[in-house]
Length: 380
Image 1: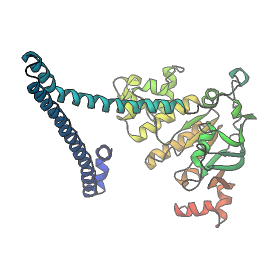
Image 2: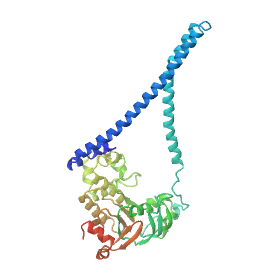
Image 3: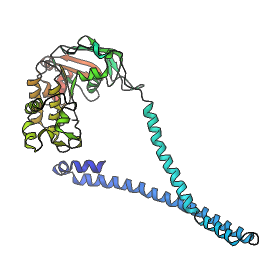
Image 4: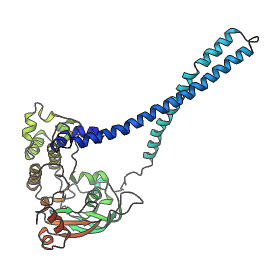
């Protein structure tokens, strides 16, 4: 894995002059690998020596019995017994190999059994007919004494948080590592279920909704862009809900139109698995195109510009401001300056709401957590 990652980032390694460091690291990993291979070969030789010893003993006993019984059995029977004894080594080797393979394959059975015992996602009794077609039409989001954990037995990652986001409000979410920023996103999509409290979107408790209905009404631009092996068309519109004109329109808004037009196949331009033939910025712009096509009233940016350069970051932020002016936007910030124009900033600390106010108010208090984060970023 380290070797493949090194090949992927070889230009960065050379640019920072870290070639020697990575050569030493790869040599260390190679030594570890060779030690494992050496012990594997030694084990095989150990087994082979003992199997051959057992076989040779059986051949010896077959020869001795043939001599002792030379007057009672025929030469053909003696030859047959000795020939079978000589093939015993290969038979024992094959038996051990088959037994080892059986043990390895049964690990797959154990994994399947383990996956079968995983609890399925919560299924609601609410039907799609009970949900308005334009929901959420306003975009208000309210957390009411909400708490959740990633699995049974772990500590709560969100500890009874309560706050309300008004319709069409732009909210920045900040906090140090482990504060619970991404947990809010997963809670909104019900990837993790609540232990206590609830989330209300436009006066509807989301735990009463089918997962498909809920997730189809929210839009997220993730930190790591997800692209599939296929054409530009299938990556933007996998269910064929939009026309070519719609696709070209969103590509133009995201500054990808010229690049796609320059390709011979246009919208049928083939994207490699994971978007390998696109830059990181272009992959994130494709995800932005998807968000523009869906155009729901709630947009979530989960550190969407963390892996792109400042220029692409600025382009994405400008496009979001222009195309989502009437939407509720929740931005999990990687760079503090990207949320300075938010209506309010939600500061999380160890799974609790530490501060929730406008950026100007929070910056006016030099003892606030947000002020310390902005100071570290060089904004104040």
